[in-house]
Amino acid sequence: MESLIDTAQNIGTVVAVILMSIFFCKQYIDKYKKEYSTAIPKGVIKQNGIDVEIEQKMNYYKELLKADRVLLFEFHNGQHYSSYRSALKMSPSYEVFRAGLDSIRNECSNLPIAIMPNYLAEIISTGYSYCPNIENIHTNMQSTYSFKKALGINAYYDRAIKDVDGNIIGFVAVEWNHAIPEHVHLLEDYGDELDHLAWYLEESIKRLVEIDRSIKKKK
Image 1 (cartoon, rainbow, N blue to C red):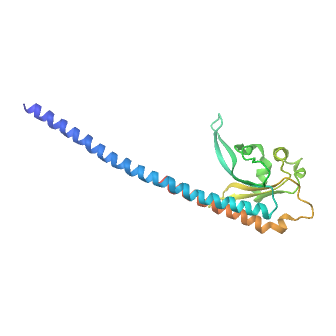
Image 2 (image 1 turned 90 degrees about the vertical axis):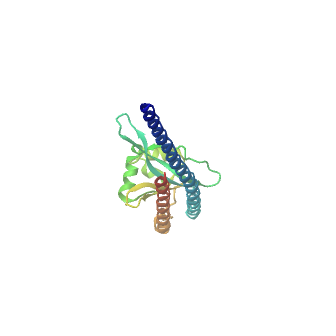
Image 3 (image 1 turned 135 degrees about the vertical axis):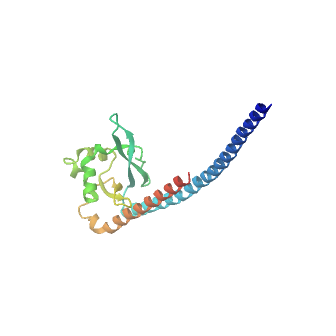
């Protein structure tokens, strides 16, 4: 009889523990779902607001500089090679272009950084790469020349974008489908404007990073 009572008590204890575990798990899951479901919509709203600001600013400078296109490239890890080495790539996260042109965003996505080493080396070392006439780089940047020429780009100004620690995380690309005339001194006449565009995009990316971090903290 005593053994039956002990068994019943043990079963009751186990059942009670299970019920309490279910109760607390449900509370945790409900809390997580509430926080997660709230964080994501808020993140979407906040990011969308910044997205709109970025496109407006890029469009403004496109018109000011009489450019055909402005893109914001960001570096990222495109997974791995068979050696498990990171396959570092670059893709445009934003693009604006003149009416009548087509988007080149797909053609510029997931580009291995190794395909244009001299071009990227210039951006990394000097902070920018300026080419008023694509024919000027036919010899010393053949891969860059071939790629940009195939997309109809005949002049460009590409400026590095940095994070809060000063690391280069991408670049803004201002592009023209025609060569810049020799009498137009783009860097001298519009140097401050080009710097401001790069600064603004840097700050916008920092804001987006903070939104992403705040969402991940709430998960």
